[in-house]
Image (cartoon, rainbow, N blue to C red; front, side, top):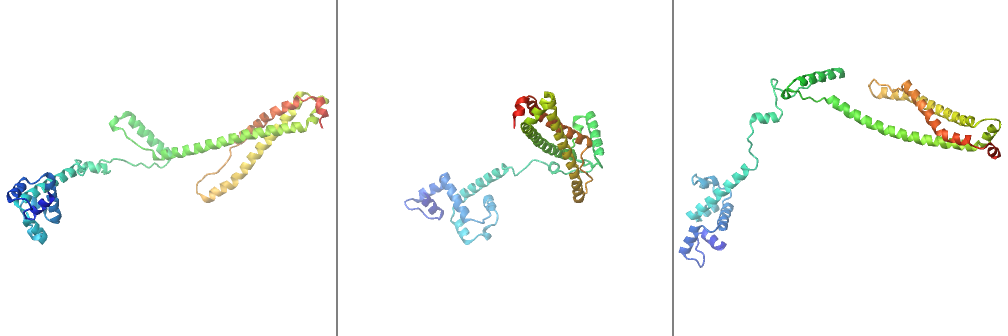
Length: 310
């Protein structure tokens, strides 16, 4: 038992055990658990002891021991000391095996580690940075590298990264995405505006029903009535387009002044004349299409019924 083991370690004969039984017990060394208990007790009592000297069985380590440690060692028999040495040796070897298997050691060489860390020399560089003076030079350098790679072996090909090109591509993608969103909003606005123009034209037809009857009574044909309202929608579209383009041109003046004051970028906001003309034509076309349905309704009105309308 633990009490008997502790008594034997203290050099005392346990109660109920003869000297022959005690000798046989110590000769057997106890079971594995008891041996571990003995080692743990020894390690606790021998804290700070040079276990390397104890394991090797040589070395003068008694001078650095406390009185309690010396008393503990003196109480051990040769069998107990040998048993504790064996357990310490086994435990130390297990710790060394765990350390060896924990990945603390590496088979890599110094040169391999330096390559991983990015070390290079002028004779054997791992990368070269090229700074072109402008975009035309950058494109020319890329062309030369591509020409070299086309005729080189796969192992000799030059791998490069066009940092400016990647940045410009990212910026272009963002600008395109924003442009698509704005185009979608503009398209929705145009559809809504066309519907509103159609509604306004239809209301105008209802308000001028009597005038339509008068025109029909003096000889105006259905086509003439339709042309009157179509001309009105065309005029509305032309005026709206011209106003929009004119206001946009006026807004570019303060915008350019603010940009020139806040930045040093040589840029100027401007609307091309061709684009301005196209915008005006689109405005006219949309209003004309929006007014076709109300103008057909006006042309089909019966002149007699129209004259009776108040």
